[in-house]
Length: 113
Length: 114
Image (cartoon, rainbow over the protein chains, first blue to last red):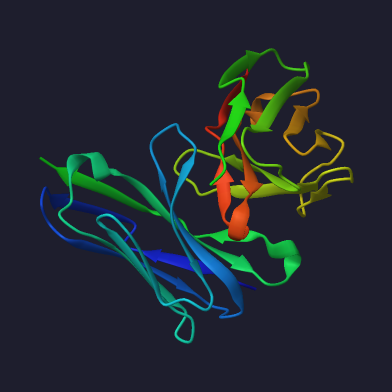
């Protein structure tokens, strides 16, 4: 059974810091991996999608890496801003079981001005 | 990507009534859509997967007679919570499987059952 774990559960940093969020998964047979952001009371915003054949993706100040063999992904946020404060969710899409997304519990990020 | 809308954004109803939530894919013809629920401070729980024109596939433990899903077109899926009770109060989010197998989510619907 695929399990996705995110560490840390919560993180508070001062504005301007670079930070790394971690995601690990137990089964490397994944189709792809997505990082999402969720603001309180809102839906999810897709940040980055990494296909299983890719090692990393970048969008602006965000960079996500994928190491399938070790079952790990990291989301790197450069020069953090208060507007980055949100919960960040990692999710893997399985090859089987109808291709459903399996979510981690999320990392709640707070960037202090 | 795909833009997904939900209606209503919030609803309050009395116990025993039925509530319908609409999910629309505004710029992408979605063969596959998903319904999730989320309790406070918890991650998303997949309720069901719906494919256009066929019956939804429900996750274990989700009552299909209570949570009716209809995916009659490539742009619209509906979730009806029948005979709602306070324990059904939750945040319901729909999602679309878009280009490149990237998943896009709606803004969510907050259901409160009194």
